[in-house]
Amino acid sequence: MEKIGFVGVGLMGHGMAASLMQAGYPMCVIAHKNRGPVEDLVSKGATEADDLDALAKASDVVHICAPGSPQVEGIVATLIANMAPGGVIVDCSTSNPVSTEMLAARVEAAGLHWVDAPLGGTPAQAATGELAAMVGAREDVFARAAPVIGAWAKTIVRVGGPGAGHKMKLLNNFLAMGYGALYAEALALAEKSGVGTAMFDSVIRGSRMDCGFYQTFMGYAVEGNREAHKFTLTNALKDMAYLSAMADGSGVMNPVQSAVKNSYAMAVNTGGDGSEDYVPHLVDFVAKANGIDR
Figure 1 (cartoon, one colour):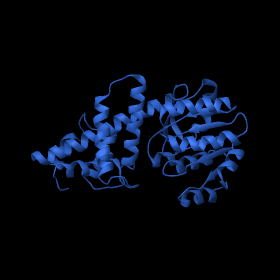
Figure 2 (spheres, one colour):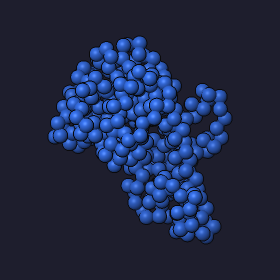
Figure 3 (tube, helix red, strand yellow):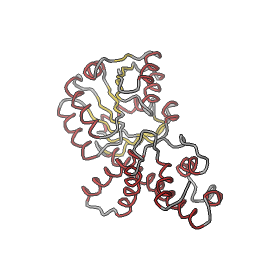
Figure 4 (cartoon, one colour):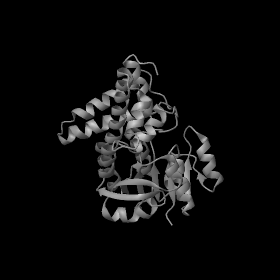
């Protein structure tokens, strides 16, 4: 059975690593800032590596859940230098496809294999092995990696070769962050025009305009549940910046995405840059910009 290394056992990674262990895979983890998830996994049988070099040497397949491409690039450089030939690197981060394609080439040239497998789902789904994976990999590498990914993903789609998974993930997040920007602006207008948030929600909920994202977003906007959708405004802005680079590289005009990105830039640059400032909180920043007291 493949020996698994996991870099980034945070909000999503902890549940993914736990699911892999439940499936019987030997697990090696490394601490970053928060020791809680690492200690929990170690208590369940995982090994903690002293450093990334040691984790790389102990692993056949290394998963990465990092904030973005700069961090992934640094991690991959160490993995390339220390993993045994034939090892597989699985980047589950939401990364810049331009960087991903460059890293995939470097990894393959070093005798290793590359998989980009960004996620769809929630931390609760990570813990139960029910995430979705959008995979970019060569067909033969995908065949090897799929059983491992299947320990934490209920739905696995090979989108194409290296980089394709990250491209699909950015398209997915464009829709999600676009919904968030639309909802925040619509709610501001609902309040300013006298319709009100509660009435707006009573009409939309259950209609054709309802969806899972709407429900988690409104879990905060209507019910005040700050934990309803735990994806930070900072990450939303980062992903929209990556999508801009993807559009530029493809020669595609993207005026709607530019407007979406600017909504999140406004929020991040006016105080929404904390680790607990989540996408549904965009409604507060848009309201404030329009003189609405929430």
